[in-house]
Image (tube, rainbow, N blue to C red; front, side):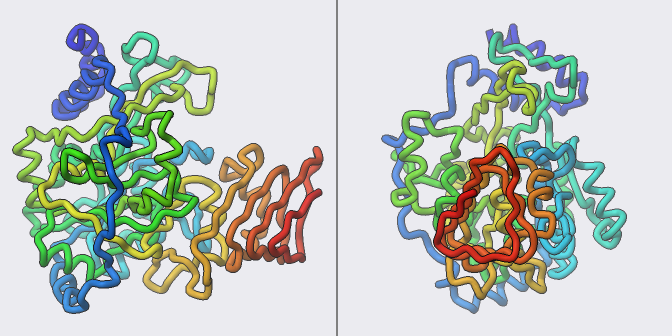
Length: 463
């Protein structure tokens, strides 16, 4: 049955010039889909990681080792996302995030500041816009000897009803999806980028999401990674209420570490998955990979690391809830933790993890609760004495980035002393609004209300 139906996918992928490696990997996961595999990881088979080593305890003698390894280290940013969940139709990294700078502005400045080689993993949807920004504003990055980007693969969406390639005449581009950031490993091979990096003398890669501006090369951490010849190192940090949906590593009963993502959690066990008192650490998706070891593993496994499948059920048009249901077959980059013998996790401070997955986080990062450091890291304000602010915005009025911009026309309110903020209803924020402690703002009227020139502290404000 796999062969009978897969011929339609193979024909579609070859007609779009996808490499044979990409086709064979998709076939591997498609066979799992037809066999009824869901990718679920059950709680009976796993246990939390306990007391991982911490960067705070690393010897400062490792800093010099890391500094010496900088010339052998490449920074790879995952830049394939469009940010459709926030209403974007271009690269998410082009969205203004802090002090008038877009994500990609900050990333480019980080690379220029620490002199590391920057490499973007773009998608077919983000490449042109992203390279255009770099060409216009940071031509020095494009003048370096190695390419500044490579492109991840794309795969067909699978029609849930008949397991055939999904079609959507209104917008054929929506028939395709990225296969998750786990695609970085075969994409490095098929683009010849892995060989180019190795030939140029690079041995280590630091990989992170473009929307995590706290992720920069740390010389002491690099020294630890290089000195101990670790093949794969995942950074984790303490979970907060804002991390309930993020993936994290767990100890499998069969031995070794595995990554547990939201889409791999059975619906009946979501409460356990979101229990931050039991599963205390979240993955930052900051990954360190030994490129020499990666080359060995890719050759040994015929360029398919056989990462755990993620079966994502979605509408073929994310903006149309009435459009046909499809499966997107994906993998996660961090799932490779189960592939490399000797893979490790290490606990890092929260300053290395400032992701922006929704307008909740975008508002927080734009506020004074976060600062842009001289070396272009976005971190919690050192004057803040609280953990990251927990923010829940009414999705009806704040889900899209343009909704957020419209309702905060003069910028974010002061949140430096705010622990938790909830907003229900349509509220527009003017100038000089300060929120402290736990604040809930509720507007149950049919009209928009405006707040300005006021301070709210540990209270519920109602209109």
